[in-house]
Length: 258
Image (tube, rainbow, N blue to C red; front, side):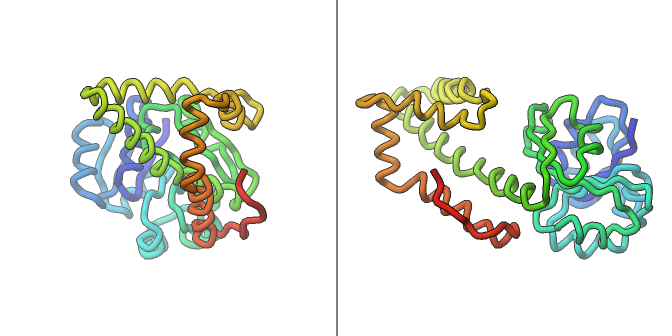
């Protein structure tokens, strides 16, 4: 089993720690966000709190979960070794910058975990080499190697769909709860309704195909979709994703969203 260190102990780091618990690893977490670190150490037996230099010195795999500005400040002063494996979950810190900040370490992978990695079933796009991510998380999560850092950054943009789509689901659930007077049942219904749609068919057109199947003229789905399209909601979502391009180093949009 591995000696794993976490630099940064926010929500994502905590979720990854919980996803690794019970597998025999030795896990060091940094003192940053002391309350969260203390909670992890209190509830997960294999977790120990240490200062950043001790986290790096005592680990074979280091998972970097810092904000970009903080990473640029603290990473160069840590005791990196050439045999370190680094997994970065940080937006705004490119692979080339990490190679400089963490020299002489060269085994560096970038990935994008979501909070539910704690229980498995999380898609993990990875660049440039998925071996380290697969070794630690592949048994319970879908590891998706991507061909370039630009492709990975596009996945960062897609991961940001979570908040606006959850906002729409929360709005719809709230509407149903107000009509029925039962918020618990409303949440159970909407959750199960959309869980039933979430098995891709391998065509690359799963959601488009579902839209086609729900396009019966005069049907409720078609009517509500038309109302939202008249309000500009789908186009606004695509335009909003395009606003992330400069930050993520993505090329300008070349065509309208379908």
